[in-house]
Image 1: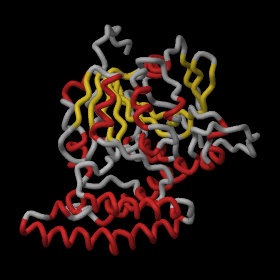
Image 2: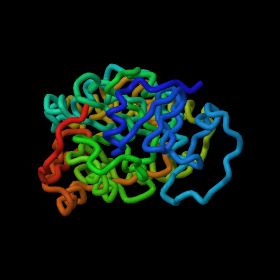
Image 3: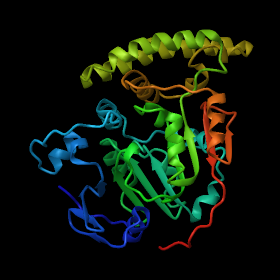
Amino acid sequence: MPSPLTVNPEIIKDIFGARQVVIEDSQVVVDGRRYPVIDGVIIALPPEKYTVAVKQKLRLGAIAKTRRSELFAEDIQYSFGHEWQSYQEPLPEYAKEFKAYFDLVPLERLKTKKVCDLGCGSGRWSAFLKGKCRALILVDFSDAIFIARHNLGSDENILYVMADILDLPFRPGAFDFLFSIGVLHHLPSDCLQAVRRLKNFAAELLIYLYYALDNRPWYFRRLLSLVTFWRQRLSKIRSENFRNAFSFLGAIIFYYPCIGLGRVLQIWRLGDRVPLYKFYHHKSLTRIRQDVYDRFFTSIEQRVSRNQIMSLRDTFAEVIISEQEPYWHFVCSSLPTATSPPSF
């Protein structure tokens, strides 16, 4: 059943650029525009982009079909929603991964900032920012947003919004800091152009995009081409029984042997020459299975090189790429601009 919001309404007013916000039992009214609220999540998608679960929770019948934008990937929405339903529990290794992704970001600077987690999934990264920033806004266009709401819970300074990254409902400059980890390369449009567009919403961005293996030996790229061949075919299969079984077998049959070979070669400090070893040798089976699911059941996957990322300097005043794994994650900063004082 729909449930009311517990967030400070001033946060909604601020990021939507609204004059008036009214929170009701099952909806929020933003300057006269009504958004459904389900389980503490604002549904800011148009009805034709609703997931099956949202339509069921709103007790909607068939929605009149309209021509969807070619930039809306329903299969990606489906896959990520189901991925995080299958792997919704927080894992111990997330703490170390969070530190790796945020190595370029002094966390103490976020205490006074409005922070957006764009494409939040299960909320696994925002969990480490809860209580450490002025406001935390989690956004996802899949049913994963409900998993994030469950994992992080209600708080007057946390807002959950179901929205499309390519059609965000927020005002320009809504956030002080925005991060998007492992998301934009799954968009049905150029991921670097997506980074450029996000400048409209925040002056500072932390982004992680799949790398083109440009700092790896040639056979890494040859292996990737084989994985891509199978991913494009397997991603069409929606049976969750098949996906879960494949994720388990893929971890056991492919990932574990690579990790084992890497451990042997690491005796001579050659482990990094084995695909998958460096990132996965200390990961749990569950964590590896989650990545197998992600790797083979998302139909869109873009890859970028370090040089391509540096081309973002045509838009941002500063682009800093971390030299550490995961490759490539980077920070983009705009020129300093005058900002108004906090309104909440």
